[in-house]
Every structure is written in C-alpha cells, then in structure tokens.
Image (cartoon, rainbow, N blue to C red; front, side, top):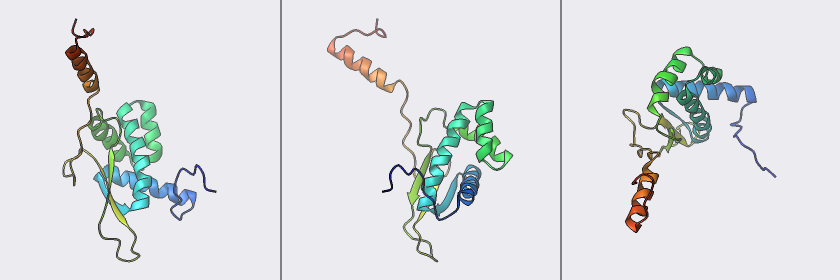
Length: 154
C-alpha cells in the first residue's frame, strides 16, 4: 500500500529530479511564468512557494537557504528584492497552475502553465489577499450592531 508518499518521482533518479526542480524554480524566478507538464508544475509549485517564504523573511539565514535551491546569484537577488516584497501581504498561494487545453505534440502529455500571481501580464488576475484585520473589523461592527461595546469602540 502506498501511504504517506509525499512527492512524485517523475520517472527520474533523486539527483536528476532535484537538479530538474532547481533549474525549473530558477527559470520561474527569472521569467515568472513557465510551461511544463502538469505533474512537474505541481512539484515545482511546492518548492517555489517555499522559496518565496524565505524571500519574505529576508534574513541572511533565509537567503542562504534559498541559495541552496536557486542556481544563480541574479535570480536570488531578484527573489529577495522583487518577489519577496511583492508578496509581503499575501499569506500563501504565490503560484498558480493553469492546465492547457492542448497536450504536448510528441507524447500527448498534459501541459500546464506555472506562474506567479500578482505579476504584470498574468493570464488571469488573482484574487486580492485578505487583509489581516478585515475579519476583526467586521467582528467589531457585528458586535456593535448587537449593542456590545468593544475595546476598539470605547
């Protein structure tokens, strides 16, 4: 029984798979949109989201962790100076996988577009991230409508 198997093998050895995923993440950082097969896109998405979390943190330790994955120094610089600040208010969901209608010509493999959300020239606009205090504001308004005073209104 296959239980609790976390990642796809993608028909490659571990070293080849890791090298391919690192190359794809580096390309995604440079171009912010890549076309690949659906299983590869879903695997790269996991790694790309992790890298953005490091970029949002911005510490030296986070930079070194990202440097283990991303192949080139200009890509790491773009990650920490452009992409990290762009997603500072977003709490996850930095990438999007859109399945393409036509499969690949040679082997009929299902294809997908992997892209970062909230970027210029994206295919479909992302939903705006929920503000951190929107829920608390609506809760305070609801309590005031019922007649309960909150610490904010006092």
